[in-house]
Structure formats: structure tokens, C-alpha cells
Image (spheres, rainbow, N blue to C red):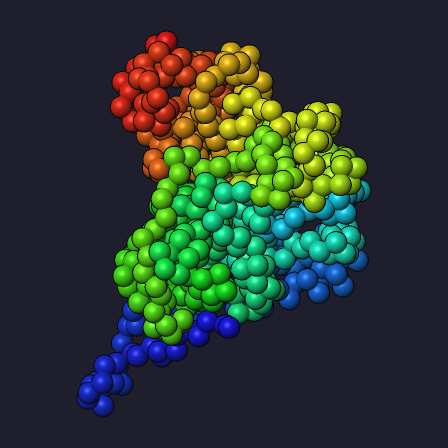
Length: 578
């Protein structure tokens, strides 16, 4: 089923009944927000013009037949800084430009001659063959880089356009793709890493997620959306896919008469205007989830704002319309049926990351393992594939927290398998800090970033492990290199947004704005910001040490960091007292 688009009404320059002589005068047309369904089909910015000029999906043929043969200098700029994204490719940041240049230079001035490439997994299981293919691609074509992102991607760097066809051939040979991993398109889907195997799962949504992917990806119907469109789906009661901050999420629920199905949440997103998704309070059966997804994606395509890129996410439309109108349009114009009402499911205190060793419903075990802030490499992926094969495990899934979960380990092998993970740089027994710290790509490769994130976070984790080796409660730290919140800065206990700050000597240095007490789950909210409070990157270890010591000294029994941060005196939050 393809959702029925709304019939665009042609823009009208003059109202009905206007005298003929008056009609001869030019009348200024209200520009609106570029919503197709209201008749505004002319592009209102260069991004919309580029997509109208040529469907971005067509760029693959040019990469294969022209650019990979003639090299970087042959690439049309409209493809390089636009349509390449639909193939999962961004130019990475050229070396030698500090954070002060990020907003001052044009994009082409920051372009390197190498690419970041995202490989989407969309909740699928990566068996030994897929893991080895990912690892070998990294070591052969990407200088051994391979980060796990918080959207279930593997992210390479140092990719040359000449090598892209060979990379595609290797990855697609094992069922992996890069198509629409970036761009104004259905971005990589977040799926529960324990779908189909967890003992406490409400419903397995794997088939619905696979069907959404079959219908949506590489489909011109959905390749020209106003902006990125993020999807999450889980049938696990721990809500392990961050559903509150996606454009559309399907969350496992139970109807008292109809049984297990999915609620739908819409309009979540972070960046500079963070909003939590709104819950429809419905029951959608498993086989109708793809129809519902298409309906929401089609509303976004047809009614989404296309004039200003800063307002082009679905969350702005949902906020303006309200949930009642959104549901009415979905039901009447796209689904052509009424959704079943059902209270939204209970919210977990905290969302699950599945780290550690856990029994599956079939008697085997899954093992959740943590790299440091998602940073691994091709060698690690290849060796993980070897471990999966040696132990006869089913394979691995990636998580929404820059981690991975290995499925189908025999009961008698779990400890040995966990020990072997340690030998390749992964651990199923991480400290609080390794388990609960995330970081975006940062200035090392990203043209939007202002500060270093990955290496700074690695050093932070190492130091906090020394200072708080036996922390008795989870504290999350999310580190972002710019305001775009790819690492979900606003919903961490300690969220760090990169910016340039002044140190004690008046020098401009790398630093962070601090968000404290953000959370998903039962206490879902955006972190508290303190007026005029910023810290230098060099002072980060000591600052977090002071804040954590303040929490440990001031908390009441059972009080979470988020609850404490909401009530704590600023002297603690500013790190001015222990």
C-alpha cells in the first residue's frame, strides 16, 4: 500500500468573483511555507531547487559511470554538496581548520577530497559474513575507520570517490546498503537490538521494519522530503530506541481485547529547537504498521514546510497543527480508516541498552558490549565476525546508544565469549562511564563541528573511571561538537554542547555549554542550562568531578541524577563546591 497523497490545490492569485478589470492587476501571492499539498510547488531555497532539478537517487549512476572514473575534480558541485548525501556520502572536514572557521567559511572551503560514508543496518542482524565485509571494507578503503553511530549505522571516513563502486559491490553482496543514509529522505531506522529474542518482549516488530524499508528506500515517492525523516520501532518494554526524539516511532503496546500491537508517536527531534514526540494513544496491528509509516511520511512530504530549512522538520508541523488535526489528516487523507484508540504504554524509568549477559526466550543468551563512545575500527569488526563464527552465534545488532548486542550465544559459552570480547577492545562488563557516554563525530571529520568530541570523550571516560570506579548509579554523558545534537545532548544527565569559550587568560579555546538533568523514559525532559555558564574542554574532567561529588553528597535515597539536577542549588551545578 502506498499512502494516497493529498491532491494539491493550485495557488489562486485572485479570489472568486473579482471583477475582470481588477483581475488584470498583479496580485502578490502569499508565499506560505512551500507546502506541496497547498499548491506551493515552486522551490523556495537552493536545496529544494536541487531536488527538483534532478531526483537525488539518480546520482548513483553518475558516481559509478563518471565520478569514480574521472576523480574528485569531475564532481558537479550540486551533486557533491547535495545529492551525494542520498548515497550516504558527505565530504569530510579538511584538516587544518579550527572550530573558529566552522561558521566563517563556505562549505566548499571546508571540503576535503575524502568522504564520510554511512552504512545503514536498520535493525537487521549482522552475521559473521556481514561483520567481516564491514571490517574488510574499512581496512581496504577507509583507513581502518568504523564508528558505531546512535542510529544503527557504521560510519567510515577517508573514503575516495574512486573506491565507492567497489565498496557498494562488497557491501551489497552481503545485503548492506548506504542508500539514503543521509539526505532529505527516510534516514536509517532504529530497531530494537533484541527484537524476536528477548524474553520480556511485547511484540516482535522486525517484519514491519523490513517491510517499511522495502517500500521506502530507493523509492522516488519518498526521496524528496522537506528534511531528514527519522524512524524508530520497538516492541520491547524498555523503549530501547529513543522513541521520544524521532519523527515517527512505533512502540509496543497491548490492547485489552486485540492483544499486542503498536502505539504511534510523532514529531520528536532535538537540534536547536528540541521537541519530544507526541503520543497518539492508538493500537496499530503489526501488519498495518508499514501503512501507518507511509501515511506519516506522506504527510511530511505533502504538508511539510519547505521554505526555511530550520523549520523543515516534521516536529514543527505537528506542533502547529496539534495532535488532533494530525491524526484527522492521517486517517482521512492517507489511511482512509480510523485508528483504534488505546492508552499509550507505560513508560520505563530508563531506556534499555542491553549491556551485559542476558537469557533469551529460546534458552540461549545475548551479550551486550560497549566500545568507547562508539569508536571501533575495521579490524575489530572483522575479529568480531570471527568470534561470532567460532561460537556459532546468530550475529550482532547495533543499538541506539553506540553499542552492539551479540545474539544467540550458547549458555555454556557466555563467560568465555565475554572474555574474548575483551581481547578485541569490547567489553560486556563496562564501567558506568564507558557504558553511558556517547559522542558525535566532532571536529576531526565533521564540517559542522566546533570542538573535538571522540578523543576528548575517550580521555574523559578514562579519567572518570579512575575518579569514580565504583559509582553506584547510572549517569549519562553525551558530548556534541555543535548545536545539532547528533549525540542527543539535551536528554543526557550531563549534556555537553561544543562551542568556543574564553579561558582564564582571555584566550579563545574549545569548550562546552552544559545541560544538566536531561532524560528519556519516565523523566523525559530537556536538561537544565545555567545562565552564562560554560566550561573549557581542558577543565571538563574537574568540572564533572565536582558536579558528581555534589550529587553524591546532596542526593536523597534513591534519587536519580536528573531529579537531583532539577532541584539542586546552582553552586553544585556550576561545580563550585564538593
